[in-house]
Amino acid sequence: MALDQQFSDQAEFAAYCREWLADNRPDPTEIPLPQAAYEVTLTEHRDYLVDWQKKCFEAGLIATDLPLEYGGHGFDGFQRVATSEVQKAGAPYFINWIGLGMTVPTLLAHGTEEQKRQFLPTIFSGEEIWCQGFSEPGAGSDLASLQSKAEKQGDHWVVNGSKIWNSMGALADWMLLLARTDRDDKYGGITYFLCRMDAPGVSVIPIYKMTGESGFNEVHLENVVVPDHQRIDEVGAGWKVAMSTLTSERGAGTGVGAVASSDSPMSHLDRLIGLAKNTPKNGRPAWDDPVIRDRIVKLYVRVSGVVENARRSRVRDLNGGAMRLPLQFKLVNSEILQEAHQVALSILGPAASLYVGDPDAVDNGKWALGYMNTYTSTISGGSSEIQRNILGERVLGLPKTK
Image (tube, rainbow, N blue to C red; front, side, top):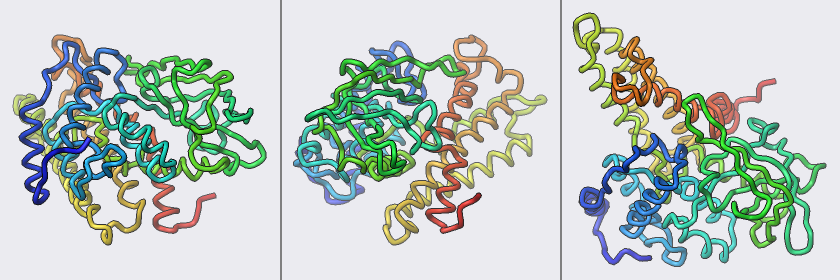
């Protein structure tokens, strides 16, 4: 669906985005939304967020730079502007963050023309929600050890196995699925499929976290039939395709408008400063404590560096390689977010033990909830330790550790 409007430059488009977001921001839900899209489990939240994503897509804030033939809007260099304005506005996040951030770039790089034309428009609109079926109980950090098996039978595959740490599985229509098609080849024996979540034999079991939420799931596959036309790339090329998907998951997935959280590191920092100025500590605002203020200022310096790196990433020659900045973003942003919440809990002191729903909890206990949720970001998509190994080995060219 093309946007029937032209813009002379990015500044004009940014002004349009700001005005549209101000005029069309939806009313809050009766039950507050979770802190991020990967925590959504309620059907009413799904419907609310699908409606919001569809409106943003129709307004040109999603798939802004993608070709018209794939359902995009055909602009050039405007998607970063749209994504930035959505985040600055504190607007609701996009429910289909896996579809936008992982499925779309994967299909663009490895999908057939038929697959692109079939799947991309419904991903943009949120009509079909996606989840990811990579990790297994025995194959997390060592993903290539996965054992879910796909056997070819005529023009389809029969898949058996289990996936774990799956976000959005209970609400999703489709899953990005890795399965083993050759047990004798660790890396070359993996194939990449698109699997319907309502296919017979697919079952989803929620995993409850320490927050009390079920943002993750187990997915079991028992004799699940996947047509061969839902295979991505060649048989045995799954590892190559998966690395493409993971590069997007680790920071490069905003290219079509993926926004999984309403908050940026700078907005978290602004709220942290407000908390410090309004929370008493020894008879004075916590902001007057030199130790607290020093920790916040150091965070501010790091966040400012992230912001400048984001600007740098827009210039290809300044990126330092295709993977360097995306991998840095994932690593640094997740750790900054975790440290910001640690500082917040230090400011709150004993009050930090009051959780969501406690009438005496500051900000309804969101700092404690947020702190526990930050471990999702530092572990999922490759833990911080794995990210550092990848940066060291693949970007800096350092030797592998033994």
